[in-house]
Length: 441
Image 1 (cartoon, helix red, strand yellow):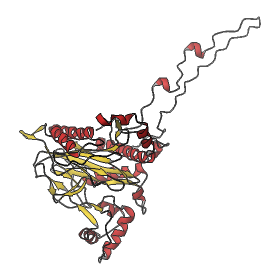
Image 2 (tube, rainbow, N blue to C red):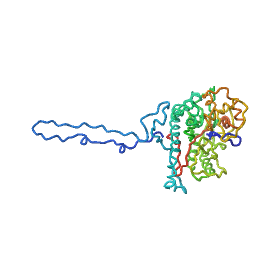
Image 3 (cartoon, rainbow, N blue to C red):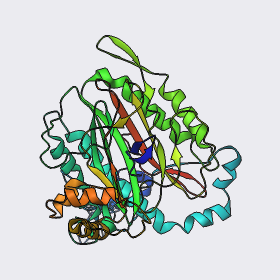
C-alpha cells in the first residue's frame, strides 16, 4: 500500500496457508489392522454340543480431525468467518525464516523465545488477518476475468474480507474492530497505486490490462498489507517475474539490524536484471524509484520508516519487534510516478491538533470518520456504504484543513505498464515471519 508523500507524490499504495497440513497417517490414530487382528479365528473346541464358531466384525478405523482446523469448509464465494474454520484460534503461521549471521543466536536463545511467547495475542491477530487475506485473494485470482467491472471486482473482494473477519462495518465502530485495513486498489497499466473505483465508475477489465490488486485486512488494528498483479496475456510474464523476484529479494534481505539502503540496493539489482518484450520492443524493467515499502504500526498502515526499492543513502536500520510491508513496483516507463486522476483514497492523520471547522458537513463527516475508521485508510465508496450523501464539500474541507490526507492515484507515463507485489513481515525476537506468504506468492 502506499500512503506516503514524497517529492510531492503520495507514496501510498501503503496507506501505510490454507489450513494446516493433516498429519501423516501414522499420527492420525488410524488403526491399520490385519484380518488376523480384526477377526477371532480361534474357534472353540468341539465339545460335542455342536457350538458354531463366531467371528468378530471388522471395526472401521476412526480418523482423527486434522490438527488446527475444524470441520467447517469455506464457501464459494468466501463468506464463512475464518474463526469458524479454526475454532481454537490456531491460525496457520506464515513463512518462518531463521535470522542469519550475527543474529543467528536468536533462533535458540531462551530469552528471545520467552519474549516471543509474550506476543501471543499479537501473533493470533496477525495470523487471523493473514488467513483472511489468503482465502479472499485466492478466490479473487480464480474468479476475476476480463469483462468484469472494477466496481464488481472491488466489492467482491471487500465483501469477502468483511465476511471472513466477521465485521461488516455497518454498525458504529465495527470496522475499527476488524475488516478492511486498506481499500481495494485496482490500478491498471501505467497507474501503479491508489486507484479504486468511486461511485458510478464504468471501467471494465480487459484482456490486455495489467492490474495491481492491493488490499489490507486488519483485526484490532493489526494490518496485513499484501498485493499481487494479475495479467491475462503472457506477454507481460517477465514484468511480473521481475517484480515478484524483487519483492522476494527484499523479504529475504530484511531483518533485525539490516540497513534500509542495503535492502533497496538488493531489490534494484534483482528488478533491473529483467527485460520484457512488448509489441516487438525489448524494454528494461525499472524500479519506480519514488515508491517504497514501509513500516506498519497498530491502526496506521504507514509508520515512520520507509523501505526503498533503489540504492540510496538511508542508513536507518530495522529493529526487533517491528512490522514492515515489503513492496516493490516495476515499470516499463520512466520509473517515476506522479499524482493523476480522481482521488478515491483518504486517511485521517494521527495526532492532529484541534482545528475549528466552519463547514457543518465537515464536522459531521469527521465525527463519522473517527467512529468508523479512526486512522485506518478508507475510500469514498465506504462513505457511500455508511449512508453519507453530498459529502464531497465536507471531505475536501477536512483535507484542506490538514485533518485528512488525500492520496490520489500514482501513475507513470501513459502507454507504460507497471506491476506490484507486496508482503507483510514480522520481525519477531527469534524468527522473521512472512505473515502474508501463501501458495500463490
